[in-house]
Length: 141
Image (cartoon, rainbow, N blue to C red):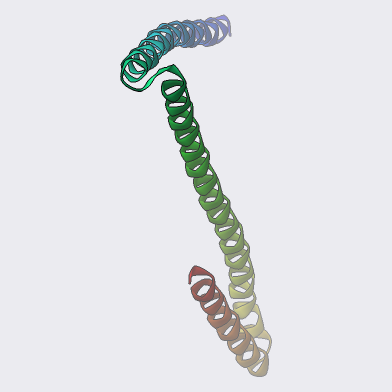
């Protein structure tokens, strides 16, 4: 029992150490990226202000940054909408699969019970399966 606990705590320490190392490395990389971004903005501002004046340079940089931010927000919204649609499709297909599986398990019991019941079960199963296929095709359009 002691070996299992020590193995688990060793793995936990190893995972925690790896996570902490990754956080530090990505933090340093983010700091360097932020420094480069500030230097880039300063350089662009200097060039534009020498060419067009300080107000035009400031407004140009602000407009470009705002445009980039709006583009990122648009991309995130489109991605979120696509993921939400995929989640809904997964839920619907899972419920349809559950219904089909339940009907498929009922068929053998009804066949044993009566021929009329089996005919009715096969007809209902065929109808449900055709409706599920039509609904999926209609939603994908």
